[in-house]
Amino acid sequence: MAPAPARADYVVLRNGSRLNVTGYEIIGDKFRMHLAGGFADVSVDEIASIEPEETFEPSVEPLTDKTPFQRLILAAASRHHLDPDLIHSVIAIESNFNPKAVSPKNARGLMQLMPRTAQLMGVADSFDPEQNIEGGTRYLSDLLKKYKNNLTLALAAYNAGPATVDNYGHRVPPYLETMKYVQRIAKTYAKLKADASGPASAQPLTDTGF
Image (cartoon, rainbow, N blue to C red; front, side, top):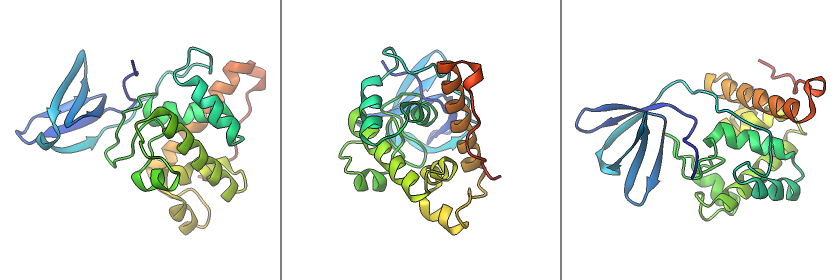
């Protein structure tokens, strides 16, 4: 069973109802909304809009054999020469380990791949955990190569797109969402490294530049 997604949003129905939800999934032709104390299914046609609310931080524990999708994370990280804790951090912030998570912008799955990105990475089904983690890890690896292992820029590009980062002179775009995203990943990643190795080993990430 997947944990509830990490975002809190308002779903506005065509009948005028406005519901505060902690996450949502597409199940067949239904939209499953996670509510306080349970969930509700409605037809996709009944939804007028989705309004983002302030996000909250998921509780992230060190990567162990009890971590959801640990085997897939380790395998993809090994193939693309990335730190598994980094992939773990991205999944935690992007979807809180919900493989059916869908964002208001239509990013999908564990690592929240946009349809075009999924296509470029050879992902046929973004809701398939193995395909999504492989595609997201490969994409992040490509971005790290593009930005010469500058994790801050790679994460900004993962969120806002590499063209946007390039248009701002290889700097983090001045978008609140992107700046918060980079900071949240950095904070989560640093916490995982500290928890795994002890407080003395915790090291700050590359200067965020904003």
